[in-house]
Length: 486
Image (cartoon, rainbow, N blue to C red; front, side):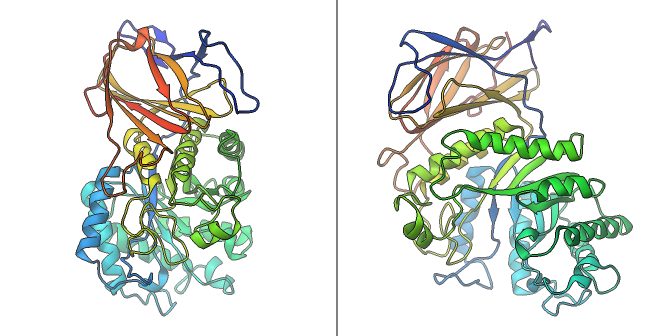
């Protein structure tokens, strides 16, 4: 809840003056001068981690092949852009073959070329104190159940314990906030019972070795595996992560139904494991396809791909619905591309496709990362539309606070809102507008969108906000000084 200086509880309200518009089904029609009061519910209950991304920690050449060392120019590009994005959490790939090519637990090459490149990335995040999510990919153990579900000298339990000791103790990567043992186990064809036994073993191995068990999460999959993990492995896990990709051509995001899907996942987990453990998206995809070839062949609109402005709107709307659902955060797929067939990055560090030019969705997603950071207090704002959504964040700074508001409008005409925040004074805000209009985000060579400075006299008295057609708005005080309470 919000408190004024006198100590009385107050409620954040959004007063909306709405212009009638056409072109959207199921919308509520109101007269131009009618004011609608929308009362924000109590703050969404979650451990808010904020927004971030997945990152492949190895440089690549123009054919998509791994390099043995980071090109200094590519390294400067990545780190400069990550500094701007300010992610609250980053998930970084790590493959067993990079340090354990023999496949025998206990036989490691901790200083292979791939591991040295990986350490360079991890060292940088450590120096910035940015939380990291770690875990193993590409295990190739589908036909070796005994290795995966067993314990002892040559087992997956020992491999993980040794790996985490190397990362957390030897290398000092204590900024590892979450560890999930197996990337997308549901997709390997294994049974859930196999994953569940592996997770029990992992917990036991970490506990016996004195490693932190508070960072273990799962099931890093989709559908019912998240709920099953909460039901069967609640004693092993302190968080639940899952993946969710929008299907090509789906209206799940634009209709607002995505938020309900996230709420249902959250409810199912809480029913299986009551308490305050976070549930978050460790892979968020704004279409269920990575390859641009897929987009051009199979989507209803060939123009809808990760290089288009509409994709950036999907990303922004996706993030709004994650925050409003009560889940704890969202990590986009992905930063700078992955390999030749998976080209959904905010740019492509290998130089393929649009290369290092920033794609439109960089501009929308970086707004959420920068201005909806970890530890903020999220409040859902219910608008009387099916084609527009809004969410608010309050971040306390002593007895003052920063405020951020994110709004998306899919309609073919603009919307006029009057926003009031009872109990809070005004200040200088930055207004960022992400639009599908041609050239609205520049040529992809410069960082960030240029904001408009808005001087809000008093939030309690209300202030107008215009959301252009097919656009996203982010209004924040975080570029300036925090706001005082009344």
